[in-house]
Image (cartoon, rainbow, N blue to C red):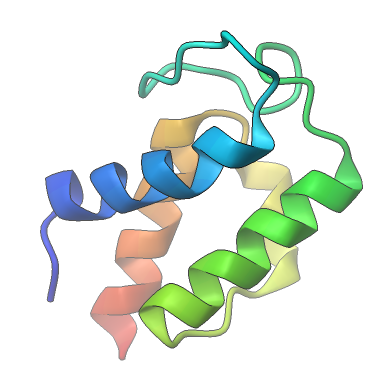
Length: 82
């Protein structure tokens, strides 16, 4: 199973092309307010993560995800369950 740091690095790389130009991406970066993600970008990110990690991300966890850290922690839990 990949470590938290491994997952964070991959998630960050997947977010970069979706984020507005010039936005820095850190663990505490808010996907909506800092990166201006709308529902389409969130779904695009989830699709890329699912393809990259070969997992299914349940949509019911989305309300618990605000920051890059939140997303990484949720993904790590999903990967741990496989």
